[in-house]
Amino acid sequence: MRKIFLLTLLACCMLLGAVAQAAQITDVKWGVNKADVLRIVVDVTDTAGYAVDMEGDTLNLTVNADKGAQVPHSKAVKSSLADSLKIVDKGSYTVVRVPLKQRLLEKSYKAFVLKKDPATGRPFRVVLDVTPRQTSYSGYGAATTVVSNRPVVSNRPTKTNSSIKKNTVIKTNTAADKKADKKKSSSKKKTDSKKVDNKKNTAAAKTETTVNKPVNKSDADKLAVIKGNGRFRTSGGLDGKIITLDAGHGGSDPGAIGSDGTKEKNITLAITKIVKEILEDKGAKVYMTRTTDVDVFGPNASDAEELQARVNVGEKYNSDMFVSLHINSSVNKNIGGFSTYYYPKTDNDLRLAKNIQNKLAANFGVDDLGVRQANFYVIKRISMPAVLVEMCFISNEKELTLMKGQWFQKKTARLIAEGIEKYFA
Amino acid sequence: MRKLILLMLLLCAVIASGCSETVPPKDDAKNAATAAVQEKKDISFIVYRAASDGSEKLLPEKITMKDNGKSLPENALIALVTTKPQDAKMDDVVPIGTKVRSLKIEQDGTAYADFTRELAKKGQGSYGEMMLCYAITNTLTEFPEIKRVQILIEGKKAITLSGHMDIEDPLTRNTTLL
Image 1 (cartoon, chains in turn green, brown):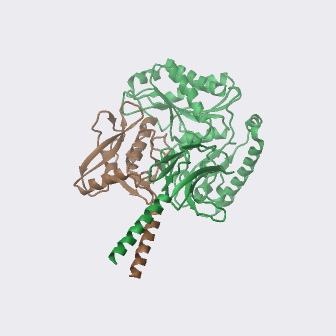
Image 2: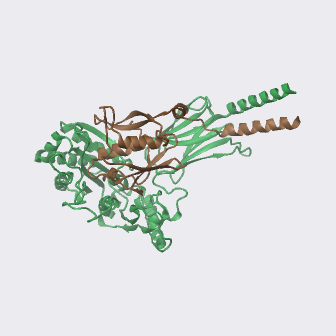
Image 3: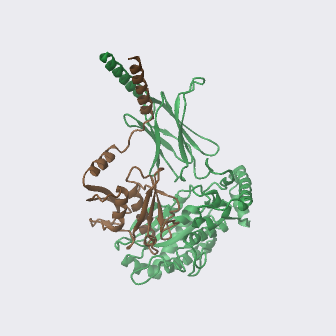
Protein backbone atom coordinates (compact mmCIF):
# COMPACT_ATOMS: atom_id res chain seq x y z
CA MET A 1 0.00 0.00 0.00
CA ARG A 2 2.78 2.34 1.01
CA LYS A 3 4.47 1.72 -2.29
CA ILE A 4 1.34 2.71 -4.14
CA PHE A 5 1.32 5.90 -2.14
CA LEU A 6 4.83 6.72 -3.05
CA LEU A 7 4.14 5.88 -6.63
CA THR A 8 1.11 8.15 -6.66
CA LEU A 9 3.15 10.87 -5.09
CA LEU A 10 5.89 10.38 -7.63
CA ALA A 11 3.36 10.43 -10.43
CA CYS A 12 1.91 13.63 -9.04
CA CYS A 13 5.31 15.22 -8.88
CA MET A 14 6.16 14.20 -12.41
CA LEU A 15 2.85 15.53 -13.58
CA LEU A 16 3.59 18.75 -11.76
CA GLY A 17 6.94 19.04 -13.39
CA ALA A 18 5.42 18.31 -16.74
CA VAL A 19 2.77 20.98 -16.21
CA ALA A 20 5.32 23.56 -15.17
CA GLN A 21 7.51 22.78 -18.15
CA ALA A 22 4.66 22.66 -20.56
CA ALA A 23 3.89 26.38 -20.19
CA GLN A 24 5.65 27.88 -23.16
CA ILE A 25 5.43 31.25 -24.83
CA THR A 26 4.44 30.83 -28.45
CA ASP A 27 4.17 34.45 -29.52
CA VAL A 28 4.52 38.04 -28.30
CA LYS A 29 2.32 40.57 -30.07
CA TRP A 30 1.68 44.26 -29.65
CA GLY A 31 -0.88 46.84 -30.70
CA VAL A 32 -1.74 50.49 -30.14
CA ASN A 33 -5.31 51.69 -29.75
CA LYS A 34 -6.86 55.08 -30.54
CA ALA A 35 -5.93 56.42 -27.12
CA ASP A 36 -2.27 55.51 -27.78
CA VAL A 37 -2.36 52.75 -25.20
CA LEU A 38 0.30 50.19 -26.00
CA ARG A 39 -0.87 46.62 -25.49
CA ILE A 40 1.55 43.72 -25.34
CA VAL A 41 0.07 40.23 -25.54
CA VAL A 42 2.06 37.16 -24.61
CA ASP A 43 0.57 33.89 -25.89
CA VAL A 44 1.26 30.99 -23.54
CA THR A 45 0.40 27.34 -24.03
CA ASP A 46 -0.81 27.02 -20.45
CA THR A 47 -1.68 29.17 -17.44
CA ALA A 48 1.36 31.06 -16.18
CA GLY A 49 2.09 33.54 -13.43
CA TYR A 50 3.37 37.01 -14.23
CA ALA A 51 4.73 40.18 -12.66
CA VAL A 52 5.37 43.73 -13.83
CA ASP A 53 7.97 46.12 -12.55
CA MET A 54 9.84 49.23 -13.58
CA GLU A 55 13.61 49.09 -13.80
CA GLY A 56 14.73 52.63 -14.46
CA ASP A 57 13.05 53.53 -17.72
CA THR A 58 12.41 49.94 -18.70
CA LEU A 59 9.13 48.23 -18.01
CA ASN A 60 9.57 44.50 -17.39
CA LEU A 61 6.83 41.93 -17.82
CA THR A 62 7.99 38.67 -16.30
CA VAL A 63 6.06 35.58 -17.36
CA ASN A 64 6.59 32.23 -15.66
CA ALA A 65 6.91 30.28 -18.88
CA ASP A 66 9.65 29.14 -21.24
CA LYS A 67 10.40 31.16 -24.30
CA GLY A 68 9.46 29.18 -27.38
CA ALA A 69 12.24 28.84 -29.93
CA GLN A 70 10.10 30.50 -32.60
CA VAL A 71 9.70 33.66 -30.50
CA PRO A 72 12.22 36.31 -31.59
CA HIS A 73 14.59 38.00 -29.14
CA SER A 74 13.34 41.43 -30.05
CA LYS A 75 10.52 43.07 -31.92
CA ALA A 76 10.09 46.51 -33.42
CA VAL A 77 7.17 48.52 -32.05
CA LYS A 78 5.47 51.61 -33.44
CA SER A 79 4.23 53.54 -30.44
CA SER A 80 4.80 56.85 -28.68
CA LEU A 81 5.96 54.76 -25.72
CA ALA A 82 8.59 52.49 -27.19
CA ASP A 83 10.36 51.60 -30.42
CA SER A 84 11.10 48.02 -29.58
CA LEU A 85 10.68 45.28 -27.05
CA LYS A 86 13.06 42.55 -26.03
CA ILE A 87 12.13 39.03 -25.10
CA VAL A 88 14.73 37.64 -22.74
CA ASP A 89 14.97 33.93 -22.01
CA LYS A 90 15.82 33.55 -18.33
CA GLY A 91 15.71 29.77 -18.30
CA SER A 92 12.73 28.94 -16.12
CA TYR A 93 10.96 32.21 -16.96
CA THR A 94 10.87 34.87 -19.62
CA VAL A 95 11.07 38.65 -19.38
CA VAL A 96 9.54 40.99 -21.93
CA ARG A 97 11.48 44.22 -21.61
CA VAL A 98 9.96 47.47 -22.89
CA PRO A 99 12.48 50.35 -22.98
CA LEU A 100 10.27 53.42 -22.61
CA LYS A 101 10.83 56.66 -24.47
CA GLN A 102 8.96 58.67 -21.88
CA ARG A 103 8.55 58.68 -18.12
CA LEU A 104 5.24 57.15 -17.21
CA LEU A 105 2.85 58.58 -14.74
CA GLU A 106 2.33 56.43 -11.71
CA LYS A 107 0.05 53.40 -12.16
CA SER A 108 -0.22 53.94 -15.88
CA TYR A 109 0.44 50.30 -16.67
CA LYS A 110 -1.42 47.18 -15.73
CA ALA A 111 -1.16 43.50 -16.53
CA PHE A 112 -3.85 40.87 -16.53
CA VAL A 113 -4.52 37.46 -18.03
CA LEU A 114 -7.03 36.28 -20.61
CA LYS A 115 -8.21 32.69 -20.36
CA LYS A 116 -7.79 30.14 -23.09
CA ASP A 117 -10.72 30.46 -25.44
CA PRO A 118 -11.56 27.20 -27.24
CA ALA A 119 -14.28 28.93 -29.26
CA THR A 120 -11.82 31.23 -31.02
CA GLY A 121 -8.81 28.99 -30.59
CA ARG A 122 -6.98 31.65 -28.64
CA PRO A 123 -4.45 30.45 -26.08
CA PHE A 124 -3.94 31.63 -22.52
CA ARG A 125 -2.59 35.18 -22.72
CA VAL A 126 -0.74 37.56 -20.41
CA VAL A 127 -1.61 41.13 -21.37
CA LEU A 128 0.21 44.34 -20.47
CA ASP A 129 -1.41 47.71 -21.17
CA VAL A 130 0.77 50.82 -20.96
CA THR A 131 -0.85 54.24 -21.06
CA PRO A 132 1.25 57.18 -22.26
CA ARG A 133 1.22 60.46 -20.34
CA GLN A 134 -0.96 62.09 -22.97
CA THR A 135 -4.20 60.22 -22.43
CA SER A 136 -6.46 59.67 -19.50
CA TYR A 137 -6.08 56.32 -17.85
CA SER A 138 -8.53 53.93 -16.28
CA GLY A 139 -9.46 54.66 -12.73
CA TYR A 140 -9.28 58.34 -13.38
CA GLY A 141 -12.56 60.21 -13.58
CA ALA A 142 -14.31 61.01 -16.84
CA ALA A 143 -14.12 64.72 -16.14
CA THR A 144 -10.37 64.51 -16.23
CA THR A 145 -9.78 63.80 -19.90
CA VAL A 146 -6.44 65.34 -20.66
CA VAL A 147 -6.74 68.32 -22.93
CA SER A 148 -3.59 68.73 -24.89
CA ASN A 149 -1.42 66.03 -26.33
CA ARG A 150 1.14 66.84 -23.72
CA PRO A 151 1.06 66.57 -19.92
CA VAL A 152 -1.09 69.10 -18.20
CA VAL A 153 -0.54 69.92 -14.57
CA SER A 154 -4.12 70.16 -13.45
CA ASN A 155 -4.86 66.70 -14.78
CA ARG A 156 -2.09 64.84 -13.09
CA PRO A 157 -3.59 61.49 -12.15
CA THR A 158 -1.59 61.16 -8.96
CA LYS A 159 -3.81 63.76 -7.41
CA THR A 160 -7.36 63.24 -6.32
CA ASN A 161 -10.17 64.62 -8.42
CA SER A 162 -10.60 67.32 -5.85
CA SER A 163 -7.35 68.91 -6.88
CA ILE A 164 -8.69 69.57 -10.34
CA LYS A 165 -11.73 71.29 -9.00
CA LYS A 166 -9.61 73.74 -7.14
CA ASN A 167 -7.37 74.56 -10.04
CA THR A 168 -8.10 77.72 -11.91
CA VAL A 169 -7.98 76.86 -15.56
CA ILE A 170 -7.32 79.83 -17.75
CA LYS A 171 -7.55 79.37 -21.49
CA THR A 172 -5.67 81.94 -23.44
CA ASN A 173 -6.34 82.86 -27.01
CA THR A 174 -4.15 85.32 -28.79
CA ALA A 175 -3.34 86.40 -32.28
CA ALA A 176 -0.24 84.27 -32.00
CA ASP A 177 -2.56 81.38 -31.45
CA LYS A 178 -4.00 81.73 -34.93
CA LYS A 179 -0.61 82.31 -36.43
CA ALA A 180 0.64 79.13 -34.92
CA ASP A 181 -2.47 77.41 -36.15
CA LYS A 182 -1.73 78.35 -39.72
CA LYS A 183 1.84 77.23 -39.51
CA LYS A 184 1.03 73.92 -37.97
CA SER A 185 -2.05 72.99 -39.92
CA SER A 186 -0.63 69.61 -40.79
CA SER A 187 -3.38 67.82 -38.93
CA LYS A 188 -6.37 70.05 -38.78
CA LYS A 189 -8.63 67.26 -37.62
CA LYS A 190 -6.50 66.61 -34.59
CA THR A 191 -6.47 70.26 -33.66
CA ASP A 192 -10.22 70.53 -33.92
CA SER A 193 -10.86 67.55 -31.72
CA LYS A 194 -8.43 68.97 -29.23
CA LYS A 195 -10.37 72.17 -29.07
CA VAL A 196 -13.59 70.33 -28.37
CA ASP A 197 -11.96 68.34 -25.64
CA ASN A 198 -10.60 71.48 -24.17
CA LYS A 199 -14.02 73.07 -23.91
CA LYS A 200 -15.48 69.94 -22.44
CA ASN A 201 -12.79 69.73 -19.85
CA THR A 202 -12.99 73.33 -18.81
CA ALA A 203 -16.74 72.99 -18.51
CA ALA A 204 -16.43 69.87 -16.45
CA ALA A 205 -13.93 71.50 -14.15
CA LYS A 206 -16.25 74.44 -13.69
CA THR A 207 -19.41 72.50 -12.99
CA GLU A 208 -17.70 70.42 -10.39
CA THR A 209 -16.42 73.36 -8.41
CA THR A 210 -19.38 73.24 -6.10
CA VAL A 211 -19.22 69.51 -5.38
CA ASN A 212 -17.17 67.72 -2.72
CA LYS A 213 -14.75 69.46 -0.49
CA PRO A 214 -11.15 68.57 -1.20
CA VAL A 215 -9.44 65.82 0.69
CA ASN A 216 -5.67 65.41 0.96
CA LYS A 217 -4.91 69.00 0.31
CA SER A 218 -1.41 69.46 -0.98
CA ASP A 219 0.40 72.61 -1.98
CA ALA A 220 -0.26 72.03 -5.64
CA ASP A 221 -4.02 71.98 -5.10
CA LYS A 222 -4.05 75.69 -4.50
CA LEU A 223 -2.18 76.45 -7.68
CA ALA A 224 -3.45 78.62 -10.45
CA VAL A 225 -2.50 76.63 -13.50
CA ILE A 226 -2.48 78.37 -16.84
CA LYS A 227 -2.68 76.28 -19.97
CA GLY A 228 -1.67 77.59 -23.35
CA ASN A 229 -3.07 76.46 -26.66
CA GLY A 230 -0.85 73.40 -26.58
CA ARG A 231 0.83 74.22 -29.87
CA PHE A 232 4.41 75.18 -30.57
CA ARG A 233 6.56 75.73 -33.61
CA THR A 234 9.85 73.94 -33.99
CA SER A 235 11.26 75.19 -37.29
CA GLY A 236 11.20 78.03 -39.80
CA GLY A 237 13.81 80.32 -38.27
CA LEU A 238 13.80 82.63 -35.25
CA ASP A 239 11.67 85.34 -36.82
CA GLY A 240 8.33 85.62 -35.07
CA LYS A 241 8.98 82.79 -32.64
CA ILE A 242 7.68 83.20 -29.09
CA ILE A 243 10.31 82.35 -26.51
CA THR A 244 9.99 82.53 -22.74
CA LEU A 245 13.22 82.88 -20.77
CA ASP A 246 13.33 82.03 -17.09
CA ALA A 247 16.07 83.54 -14.96
CA GLY A 248 16.48 80.98 -12.18
CA HIS A 249 15.52 81.89 -8.60
CA GLY A 250 15.04 85.55 -7.57
CA GLY A 251 13.60 87.72 -4.82
CA SER A 252 13.45 85.80 -1.55
CA ASP A 253 15.27 82.85 -3.14
CA PRO A 254 18.92 83.70 -3.87
CA GLY A 255 19.62 80.30 -5.38
CA ALA A 256 23.12 79.01 -4.78
CA ILE A 257 25.62 81.34 -3.16
CA GLY A 258 29.34 81.60 -3.91
CA SER A 259 32.17 81.80 -1.39
CA ASP A 260 32.28 85.60 -1.81
CA GLY A 261 28.53 86.04 -1.41
CA THR A 262 27.73 86.14 -5.14
CA LYS A 263 24.13 85.06 -5.63
CA GLU A 264 22.94 82.77 -8.41
CA LYS A 265 19.77 84.83 -8.92
CA ASN A 266 21.77 87.90 -9.99
CA ILE A 267 24.00 86.09 -12.49
CA THR A 268 21.07 84.25 -14.08
CA LEU A 269 19.15 87.50 -14.50
CA ALA A 270 22.11 89.29 -16.06
CA ILE A 271 22.71 86.53 -18.61
CA THR A 272 19.00 86.07 -19.36
CA LYS A 273 18.66 89.76 -20.21
CA ILE A 274 21.49 89.48 -22.76
CA VAL A 275 19.94 86.37 -24.33
CA LYS A 276 16.67 88.28 -24.69
CA GLU A 277 18.38 91.17 -26.49
CA ILE A 278 20.15 88.89 -28.95
CA LEU A 279 17.00 86.89 -29.75
CA GLU A 280 14.90 90.03 -30.19
CA ASP A 281 17.47 91.44 -32.59
CA LYS A 282 16.88 88.36 -34.70
CA GLY A 283 13.12 88.86 -34.73
CA ALA A 284 11.91 86.60 -31.90
CA LYS A 285 9.25 87.69 -29.44
CA VAL A 286 10.80 87.15 -26.02
CA TYR A 287 9.14 87.10 -22.61
CA MET A 288 10.90 86.80 -19.29
CA THR A 289 9.45 85.23 -16.15
CA ARG A 290 11.11 88.04 -14.21
CA THR A 291 13.03 91.14 -15.30
CA THR A 292 14.10 92.28 -11.84
CA ASP A 293 15.12 90.68 -8.55
CA VAL A 294 11.69 89.42 -7.49
CA ASP A 295 9.82 86.22 -6.73
CA VAL A 296 7.80 85.50 -9.89
CA PHE A 297 4.68 84.55 -7.95
CA GLY A 298 5.01 87.35 -5.42
CA PRO A 299 6.05 87.59 -1.79
CA ASN A 300 5.62 84.59 0.52
CA ALA A 301 5.09 82.12 -2.28
CA SER A 302 5.22 78.40 -1.63
CA ASP A 303 7.71 76.40 -3.68
CA ALA A 304 4.89 75.11 -5.84
CA GLU A 305 3.40 78.55 -6.44
CA GLU A 306 6.77 79.98 -7.38
CA LEU A 307 7.68 77.23 -9.82
CA GLN A 308 4.21 77.06 -11.34
CA ALA A 309 4.20 80.85 -11.78
CA ARG A 310 7.22 80.46 -14.07
CA VAL A 311 5.52 77.69 -16.05
CA ASN A 312 2.43 79.90 -16.31
CA VAL A 313 4.36 82.68 -18.05
CA GLY A 314 5.44 80.27 -20.78
CA GLU A 315 1.90 78.94 -21.18
CA LYS A 316 0.20 82.33 -21.03
CA TYR A 317 2.08 83.58 -24.09
CA ASN A 318 1.67 80.29 -25.97
CA SER A 319 5.44 80.09 -26.22
CA ASP A 320 7.19 77.95 -28.78
CA MET A 321 9.99 77.34 -26.31
CA PHE A 322 10.86 77.74 -22.64
CA VAL A 323 14.47 78.14 -21.51
CA SER A 324 15.37 78.26 -17.82
CA LEU A 325 18.84 79.53 -16.94
CA HIS A 326 20.59 78.47 -13.72
CA ILE A 327 23.98 78.35 -12.08
CA ASN A 328 24.94 75.03 -10.52
CA SER A 329 26.43 74.27 -7.14
CA SER A 330 27.89 71.27 -5.38
CA VAL A 331 29.38 70.41 -2.02
CA ASN A 332 32.41 69.26 -3.99
CA LYS A 333 34.25 72.44 -4.95
CA ASN A 334 36.13 70.76 -7.80
CA ILE A 335 33.11 70.03 -9.94
CA GLY A 336 32.56 72.42 -12.81
CA GLY A 337 31.13 72.80 -16.26
CA PHE A 338 28.01 73.30 -18.32
CA SER A 339 25.09 70.91 -18.45
CA THR A 340 21.72 71.12 -20.18
CA TYR A 341 18.74 69.26 -18.81
CA TYR A 342 15.61 68.16 -20.63
CA TYR A 343 12.53 66.14 -19.82
CA PRO A 344 11.43 63.86 -22.67
CA LYS A 345 7.81 64.99 -22.98
CA THR A 346 7.81 66.04 -26.64
CA ASP A 347 9.95 64.96 -29.59
CA ASN A 348 11.82 68.26 -29.43
CA ASP A 349 13.06 68.60 -25.85
CA LEU A 350 16.18 66.54 -26.39
CA ARG A 351 16.92 68.24 -29.73
CA LEU A 352 16.72 71.66 -28.07
CA ALA A 353 19.02 70.54 -25.24
CA LYS A 354 21.57 69.17 -27.70
CA ASN A 355 21.57 72.35 -29.79
CA ILE A 356 22.30 74.53 -26.76
CA GLN A 357 24.76 72.21 -25.01
CA ASN A 358 26.75 71.61 -28.20
CA LYS A 359 27.32 75.35 -28.56
CA LEU A 360 28.41 75.75 -24.94
CA ALA A 361 30.63 72.67 -24.94
CA ALA A 362 32.43 73.56 -28.16
CA ASN A 363 33.25 77.15 -27.25
CA PHE A 364 34.31 77.12 -23.62
CA GLY A 365 37.35 75.62 -21.97
CA VAL A 366 35.34 74.33 -19.01
CA ASP A 367 34.05 70.79 -18.53
CA ASP A 368 31.27 69.53 -20.75
CA LEU A 369 28.90 67.71 -18.42
CA GLY A 370 26.62 67.06 -21.36
CA VAL A 371 22.92 66.76 -22.04
CA ARG A 372 21.05 65.09 -19.25
CA GLN A 373 17.53 64.04 -18.48
CA ALA A 374 16.03 65.31 -15.24
CA ASN A 375 12.80 65.44 -13.34
CA PHE A 376 12.89 69.23 -12.98
CA TYR A 377 9.59 70.98 -12.31
CA VAL A 378 9.63 73.81 -14.85
CA ILE A 379 10.76 71.72 -17.82
CA LYS A 380 8.56 68.76 -16.93
CA ARG A 381 5.27 70.51 -16.24
CA ILE A 382 5.34 73.00 -19.09
CA SER A 383 3.77 71.85 -22.34
CA MET A 384 6.20 73.20 -24.93
CA PRO A 385 9.81 72.06 -25.52
CA ALA A 386 11.92 73.28 -22.62
CA VAL A 387 15.41 73.04 -21.19
CA LEU A 388 17.16 74.03 -18.00
CA VAL A 389 20.73 75.16 -18.62
CA GLU A 390 23.21 75.01 -15.75
CA MET A 391 25.85 77.59 -16.58
CA CYS A 392 28.85 76.39 -14.55
CA PHE A 393 29.27 75.98 -10.79
CA ILE A 394 29.20 78.86 -8.33
CA SER A 395 30.86 76.50 -5.84
CA ASN A 396 33.92 76.22 -8.10
CA GLU A 397 36.26 79.18 -7.43
CA LYS A 398 37.58 79.37 -10.98
CA GLU A 399 34.11 79.36 -12.48
CA LEU A 400 32.82 81.82 -9.88
CA THR A 401 35.42 84.34 -11.00
CA LEU A 402 34.49 83.67 -14.62
CA MET A 403 30.75 84.05 -14.24
CA LYS A 404 31.00 87.41 -12.49
CA GLY A 405 32.71 88.87 -15.56
CA GLN A 406 31.09 90.45 -18.60
CA TRP A 407 33.08 88.28 -20.98
CA PHE A 408 31.61 85.04 -19.64
CA GLN A 409 28.10 86.42 -19.34
CA LYS A 410 28.03 87.76 -22.89
CA LYS A 411 29.65 84.73 -24.42
CA THR A 412 27.35 82.32 -22.61
CA ALA A 413 24.30 84.35 -23.62
CA ARG A 414 25.42 84.48 -27.24
CA LEU A 415 26.04 80.73 -27.39
CA ILE A 416 22.66 79.94 -25.85
CA ALA A 417 20.97 82.25 -28.37
CA GLU A 418 22.89 80.56 -31.18
CA GLY A 419 21.77 77.16 -29.95
CA ILE A 420 18.16 78.35 -29.94
CA GLU A 421 18.56 79.77 -33.44
CA LYS A 422 20.00 76.51 -34.70
CA TYR A 423 17.07 74.61 -33.22
CA PHE A 424 14.60 76.73 -35.21
CA ALA A 425 16.72 76.61 -38.38
CA MET B 1 -7.19 4.49 1.49
CA ARG B 2 -9.16 6.01 -1.34
CA LYS B 3 -9.58 9.09 0.73
CA LEU B 4 -5.87 9.41 1.20
CA ILE B 5 -5.18 9.12 -2.49
CA LEU B 6 -7.83 11.71 -3.18
CA LEU B 7 -6.27 13.94 -0.58
CA MET B 8 -2.91 13.55 -2.20
CA LEU B 9 -4.28 14.34 -5.61
CA LEU B 10 -5.97 17.37 -4.14
CA LEU B 11 -2.73 18.42 -2.54
CA CYS B 12 -0.94 18.00 -5.85
CA ALA B 13 -3.58 20.06 -7.58
CA VAL B 14 -3.21 22.81 -5.03
CA ILE B 15 0.54 22.78 -5.37
CA ALA B 16 0.25 22.75 -9.14
CA SER B 17 -2.07 25.72 -9.22
CA GLY B 18 0.13 27.45 -6.71
CA CYS B 19 3.15 26.87 -8.88
CA SER B 20 1.61 28.25 -11.99
CA GLU B 21 0.83 31.47 -10.15
CA THR B 22 4.26 31.82 -8.68
CA VAL B 23 6.42 34.53 -10.09
CA PRO B 24 10.09 33.75 -10.25
CA PRO B 25 11.93 35.47 -7.44
CA LYS B 26 14.22 38.01 -9.07
CA ASP B 27 16.50 38.79 -6.23
CA ASP B 28 17.28 35.35 -4.93
CA ALA B 29 20.84 36.14 -4.08
CA LYS B 30 19.96 39.42 -2.44
CA ASN B 31 17.16 37.89 -0.36
CA ALA B 32 19.39 35.09 0.75
CA ALA B 33 22.10 37.51 1.72
CA THR B 34 19.66 39.64 3.68
CA ALA B 35 18.28 36.60 5.48
CA ALA B 36 21.72 35.32 6.32
CA VAL B 37 22.74 38.68 7.68
CA GLN B 38 19.67 38.96 9.84
CA GLU B 39 20.47 35.70 11.59
CA LYS B 40 23.73 37.14 12.85
CA LYS B 41 24.28 40.04 15.18
CA ASP B 42 25.76 42.24 12.50
CA ILE B 43 23.63 43.69 9.77
CA SER B 44 24.82 45.22 6.54
CA PHE B 45 23.31 47.17 3.70
CA ILE B 46 24.17 49.44 0.80
CA VAL B 47 23.79 53.21 0.76
CA TYR B 48 24.37 55.33 -2.33
CA ARG B 49 26.63 58.39 -2.30
CA ALA B 50 27.46 60.96 -4.96
CA ALA B 51 30.68 60.34 -6.85
CA SER B 52 33.09 63.11 -5.96
CA ASP B 53 34.46 63.46 -9.50
CA GLY B 54 31.31 65.26 -10.63
CA SER B 55 30.44 62.47 -13.03
CA GLU B 56 26.82 62.58 -11.87
CA LYS B 57 27.02 59.01 -10.64
CA LEU B 58 25.95 57.35 -7.42
CA LEU B 59 28.38 54.90 -5.86
CA PRO B 60 27.38 52.12 -3.46
CA GLU B 61 28.90 52.01 -0.01
CA LYS B 62 28.50 48.91 2.13
CA ILE B 63 27.79 49.64 5.75
CA THR B 64 27.92 47.00 8.47
CA MET B 65 26.59 47.67 11.95
CA LYS B 66 25.21 45.93 15.03
CA ASP B 67 21.58 44.88 14.79
CA ASN B 68 19.56 47.48 16.68
CA GLY B 69 16.12 46.02 16.04
CA LYS B 70 15.24 48.56 13.39
CA SER B 71 14.40 47.42 9.88
CA LEU B 72 17.16 47.31 7.28
CA PRO B 73 15.65 50.05 5.08
CA GLU B 74 15.31 52.33 8.09
CA ASN B 75 18.89 51.70 9.16
CA ALA B 76 20.11 52.32 5.63
CA LEU B 77 18.22 55.60 5.41
CA ILE B 78 19.49 56.79 8.80
CA ALA B 79 23.04 55.80 7.86
CA LEU B 80 22.80 57.70 4.57
CA VAL B 81 21.63 60.84 6.34
CA THR B 82 23.79 60.78 9.46
CA THR B 83 27.09 59.19 8.46
CA LYS B 84 29.89 60.45 6.25
CA PRO B 85 31.19 58.37 3.35
CA GLN B 86 34.30 56.36 4.25
CA ASP B 87 35.74 56.66 0.77
CA ALA B 88 37.22 59.87 -0.65
CA LYS B 89 35.66 58.96 -3.99
CA MET B 90 32.27 59.80 -2.52
CA ASP B 91 30.59 63.02 -1.39
CA ASP B 92 28.05 63.52 1.36
CA VAL B 93 25.20 65.39 -0.34
CA VAL B 94 22.79 65.42 2.61
CA PRO B 95 22.44 68.90 4.15
CA ILE B 96 23.88 69.21 7.65
CA GLY B 97 21.38 68.74 10.44
CA THR B 98 18.93 66.59 8.45
CA LYS B 99 17.26 63.83 10.45
CA VAL B 100 14.96 60.99 9.45
CA ARG B 101 11.57 61.43 11.11
CA SER B 102 10.08 58.15 9.96
CA LEU B 103 9.99 55.59 7.20
CA LYS B 104 6.77 53.83 6.26
CA ILE B 105 6.62 51.16 3.60
CA GLU B 106 3.23 50.51 2.06
CA GLN B 107 2.05 47.21 0.61
CA ASP B 108 2.12 48.63 -2.91
CA GLY B 109 5.87 49.21 -2.65
CA THR B 110 5.77 52.94 -1.95
CA ALA B 111 8.07 54.05 0.85
CA TYR B 112 7.25 57.31 2.61
CA ALA B 113 10.52 58.75 3.82
CA ASP B 114 9.91 61.66 6.17
CA PHE B 115 12.74 64.10 6.93
CA THR B 116 13.24 67.21 9.00
CA ARG B 117 13.12 70.53 7.14
CA GLU B 118 16.90 70.75 6.79
CA LEU B 119 16.67 68.38 3.82
CA ALA B 120 14.83 71.02 1.78
CA LYS B 121 17.74 73.41 2.00
CA LYS B 122 17.62 76.29 -0.45
CA GLY B 123 20.77 77.22 -2.32
CA GLN B 124 21.76 73.75 -3.42
CA GLY B 125 22.39 73.59 -7.12
CA SER B 126 20.28 71.29 -9.23
CA TYR B 127 23.24 68.91 -9.23
CA GLY B 128 23.23 68.58 -5.44
CA GLU B 129 19.46 68.38 -5.31
CA MET B 130 19.24 65.63 -7.90
CA MET B 131 22.03 63.57 -6.34
CA LEU B 132 20.36 63.93 -2.94
CA CYS B 133 16.93 62.82 -4.20
CA TYR B 134 18.34 59.77 -5.93
CA ALA B 135 20.81 58.88 -3.17
CA ILE B 136 17.71 58.51 -0.99
CA THR B 137 15.61 56.77 -3.65
CA ASN B 138 18.28 54.36 -4.84
CA THR B 139 19.35 53.48 -1.28
CA LEU B 140 15.76 52.57 -0.41
CA THR B 141 14.89 50.80 -3.67
CA GLU B 142 17.88 48.52 -3.04
CA PHE B 143 15.38 46.62 -0.89
CA PRO B 144 13.02 44.48 -2.98
CA GLU B 145 9.94 45.54 -1.01
CA ILE B 146 10.44 49.17 -2.00
CA LYS B 147 9.60 50.16 -5.57
CA ARG B 148 9.26 53.93 -5.25
CA VAL B 149 9.98 56.63 -2.72
CA GLN B 150 7.87 59.59 -1.68
CA ILE B 151 10.00 62.19 0.07
CA LEU B 152 8.17 64.02 2.87
CA ILE B 153 9.33 67.10 4.74
CA GLU B 154 8.06 67.40 8.32
CA GLY B 155 5.33 64.88 7.47
CA LYS B 156 4.07 66.68 4.38
CA LYS B 157 4.44 66.09 0.67
CA ALA B 158 6.96 68.47 -0.83
CA ILE B 159 6.94 69.80 -4.40
CA THR B 160 10.67 70.37 -4.53
CA LEU B 161 13.67 70.43 -2.21
CA SER B 162 15.53 73.44 -3.54
CA GLY B 163 13.65 74.63 -6.58
CA HIS B 164 14.60 72.28 -9.42
CA MET B 165 13.50 68.70 -8.80
CA ASP B 166 9.80 67.83 -9.01
CA ILE B 167 9.21 65.41 -6.15
CA GLU B 168 5.46 65.62 -5.79
CA ASP B 169 5.12 62.12 -7.24
CA PRO B 170 7.12 59.22 -5.79
CA LEU B 171 10.53 58.75 -7.40
CA THR B 172 11.55 55.42 -8.88
CA ARG B 173 15.04 53.98 -8.95
CA ASN B 174 17.30 55.95 -11.23
CA THR B 175 19.54 53.48 -13.02
CA THR B 176 21.20 56.04 -15.27
CA LEU B 177 23.00 57.45 -12.23
CA LEU B 178 24.37 54.05 -11.23
